Figure (cartoon, rainbow, N blue to C red):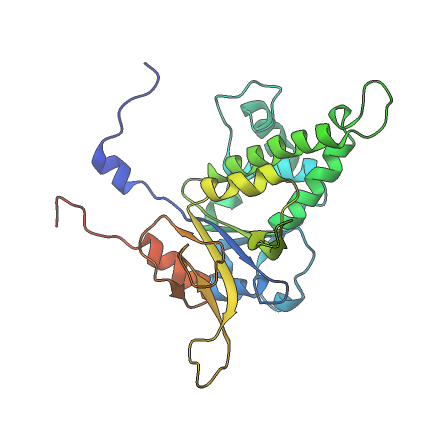
Length: 273
C-alpha cells in the first residue's frame, strides 16, 4: 500500500490553515483587512489592481492578469496533485513546469496566509478565457456557445478553488463582492458576485468559513453603523455565513488576523478534557 493510517496524534499535530470566503459590498473595506494581518507572512494575490487602500502596506504581491496565470499560481500555491494525469492542470507535470518558469519557489515557505482579492475578478477572467476555447464555440456555426463556455467555466473555477484548498497548512482567504439578487417572484437574497451559477452553489461547500463583512447597527439609540463580520447563517439580515470551526460568535470584529488566531488556537482534545 502506498498510503497508511494517520494516527490521531499525527492528525492533531498537523498544521491546518483557515480556508475562508469573505464577501461584502464594494467599498466596505475588504482589501483593508490586509492591515490586520502580518504583512511579513502574507502573500497578497491582487487580481483587481485595487490596492489603493493599502498602498502604504509593505506586503509581497502577485498580480496574475489572465486565467492561465491564475491556474499557474494555484498550481504553485497548492502543490502538485498526484491523482491527475500529466496533461491536466495542477498535475505534477504542471507544477514542475511552473516551478521551472519561476525559479526558486522556496520563498513561499515564509507565507502563512494567501489573501486572494478577488474571486469575483477571477470568475470574470475564467469566463473570458472559457469563451475563447473550442468548447465555448459552436462546432457547426463557429459562433459563441454560451452554454458550453459556462460549463467549462464552472469546471475550471471549481478545480481552481479546490486546488487552492490543498494548501493545507496555509490560510487561504478569498475576497468577493456581495450583491442582492431579486428573483421573478420578487424574493431577494444575498449572494457572492461570481460568474456562473455552479461556482456560486458549490463554493460554500469548499471553504470552511463564509463570512459577510457589512455595516451593522448594534446600538439602536446611537444608530451608528460599524463594520463587522457576520459569521453565523442564522444572522438577522440573511447574509451568507458559515462557521465550520464552531468557535466564532454571530458577529466578530473585522480583524482578519484575530479571526484566524481564534479559529486556529489550540484546544483541549476530548481525551484530555
